Image (cartoon, rainbow, N blue to C red; front, side, top):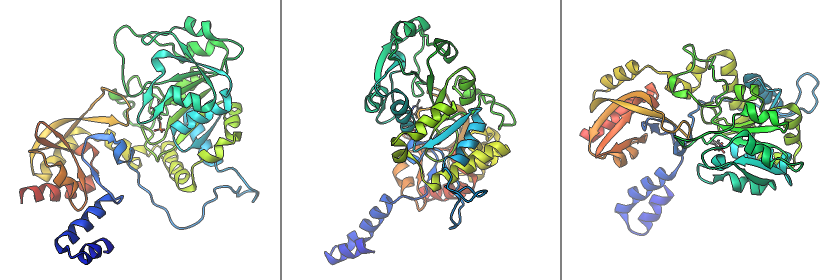
Length: 391
Ligand SMILES: *Cc1c(COP(=O)(O)O)cnc(C)c1O
């Protein structure tokens, strides 16, 4: 209103609606993700359903004793159980988890990192820079493509605080490559911290009736990484875990406790809203209701036949086979079979301006609507948006 009034005040009547609409598009609002990228970083990664009343929550009170408790206790306990860890805590994201671990456990000490793992992940998360912030000294190990246990042995000294292993989740080096598995690193007698990144809890995916899908192959999982001997793992909860943005530190209770007591913890701790929704997602894993109640896993496990039926029901554009991507820099080069609609021409901008914006992918002057990332209740929105193109 105010923006429209300002334009009218300037005597620019024509401009009033334009200005108001332009402003409306800068506001945060629900959009339909028809890109086929399941975890689209620009669209908030894992989509979430949030149902919450206005009541208070027992964030830091022990309901048994009535005494002050820890906000980490409930969610940390569930996450620890889910990945087979002694203990776990939650911070704002995985970058915060890594920063906290290195600050609490390695400040002033040496941290060997394989040269092939000294990577940049997403905008601004660069291993050498996070290391510098934490006050730990990065010690390069091996070569870009190959690093063996002996390379680690050579750099270890009494100043070594921990060994840091990072899953280079957003790219892949193929050919003459070799890294040192956690199981071997654990034999060196120094705590191994593994940043597994994507938050796959268990490689066996016990929450999926059909077991692990083919596209997950090779993705490190929290439970197995800890079982192989890592003292701690860190991961994001808005990637393959399918929850809100947060980061988890899970593993040895002694090391987790040292992280929890570090002064940075206060600056990195999430609020009640995030912890509650993380709690809900963790409960869905424990109750084995993930495929119905965690949108990421619902999208990832929908059969192509169902997507094909939905495409035909929408009935606008050409039904086409497509390939969807996990996204969020996870599983580079991996696709999952998908289905959707193709419309000749580049209609991305018009579809983004629909009442409920529809975000699509355009390739070679063809606009693609991938239904794997569209909630079926939004098929009507997609139909209306595509219908408006024809009109
Ligand atoms: C995604 C990712 C990060 C960054 O995680 P955020 O939760 O976005 O901070 C760090 N390390 C790895 C290996 C990742 O995959």
